[in-house]
Every structure is written in structure tokens, then in C-alpha cells.
Length: 286
Image 1 (cartoon, rainbow, N blue to C red):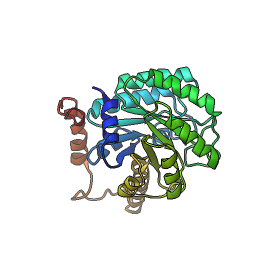
Image 2 (image 1 turned 135 degrees about the horizontal axis):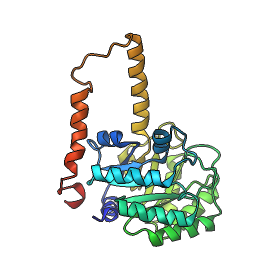
Image 3 (image 1 turned 45 degrees about the vertical axis):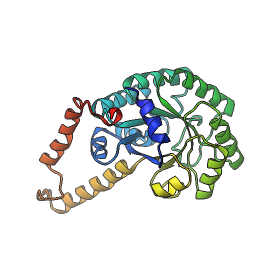
Image 4 (image 1 turned 30 degrees about the horizontal axis):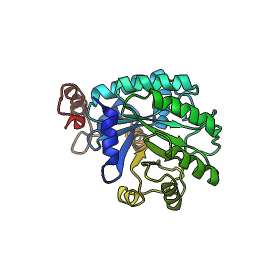
């Protein structure tokens, strides 16, 4: 299965391709009912797997293991994977990319931050000297197999943003991402400097970027939209609400009924993941 090729074809089709950020197998199971593409968010994975913020704690074997489990349960979904800075070392980045390619990932995002890294929408980000990042990016591109590679810059100075975006568009990376874009005008400016290269936009609740619909993004020339944390933040809110209600009711569970999730609904959701293992008519082979 050529998962990277399938994602490239999706990106090149008309409209903006949405990829939904998931953080564990259960959130992916719910998201699969609504969307065809997943984004394996570093923010969500650091939060769910370690209970820590997105500042560089992720170990690459944990991420590869997660992607392997995702692909088994969801053979027909696009899987774009956040690999941060490639886990520092260029040789490690190449090894991880090759492992993810064999695990069935569709693509990866490689950023130009230096340690200590930050979430793309946080303050205090620092970027590598550009040539150092380009050297790492070219090594990854040479070792990627079929994977889509998104070249990401976290530059914050205006001239540096445009310089790096334009230079990344001239590489063999499939897509360019400037993270933390603060306005529609800046989306237009980035779109202009990267020419025909596909453009990715990252939306995260409470982040620095404007809230835009898919039709609005399409009109701006955005080819891919990743939604980093809708599942994670919804779970945070829902769990907190449920436990407050449980406490208010002195530990009495709510009655089962329409619109509520209980054992039958949860089991039915998870059983679909078993059936997908044997489904030869997946989305990527139609």
C-alpha cells in the first residue's frame, strides 16, 4: 500500500484537505466515524502518553509504536505524523522516517526548531540556523520512501518567515507549513512566496492563528488543514463535566439512554476496528 501516494493525490485534489488531530486509539476510533484523515499531533501525544506539555519529551519509539497500532486499526485513513525536530539528530530523523514508512504512515512533519522546543503556537520558540535545518531536511527527503514530507518553519521574525518559506518551497518537500500564522494577510503573503507548492495551515484552539472554515482556507489557497487538538480538548471538557456531575450526584451514575455512551455503544465503536483489519475495500484502494 502506497499511503504517501494516496495522501499526495488527496492534497492535489480540489479543496482543502482536513486532517484531524487524534491523541490515542479511542479518539481515533471516534474521529474515524467523521473524517478520512488523521494528524498524529505531538501536543496530543505528549499530553496523553506522558501527561506532559509539548516541549520535547516524546521518545521516537513510542511514536512509531503508536503509528503501527493506528495503521492496523485504520487501514483506510491518511496518517500524517508530527516528528517535531526529528528527535534532534539528523541520523535519528532518517531512521524514524524509515520506520514510519514501513509502519504505514502517510507523511511526516519536520520542523526547524532547536531545543528546548515549544508548541508551534507558544511563545519563546527558537529556530535552527537555516542551513542546518536544510541539511537535515535533505537527508530526510533522501530516506523517506513513499512518505509525504511537510517542511515546517517556526520562524517568528517577518523577514525570516518569508525567506524560509520561499526557500522550503524550492526543496523536494511535498508541502510547506509556517506554524503560528497570526492573520489572514500572512496566509496570503506566505501563499505568494511559495508559488505552486502545497500549503498547510495548522489550527489549534486557543492558538495564535485565526479560526477559519475549510471554504475560507480553500479561497486562500490552503491545500491542507491540520486540526491539532479538537479531540483532546473536547475530552478534557467532557471528562471534567462528567466527573463534576458524578460528584454532585454523590457517586450515582447517570441513567443510560439516547445520546449517552455506555457499554453497548463503546463496544460497537471498538468492534469496528476489528472488522477493518479484514476490510480489503479501504478508502485508499478504491
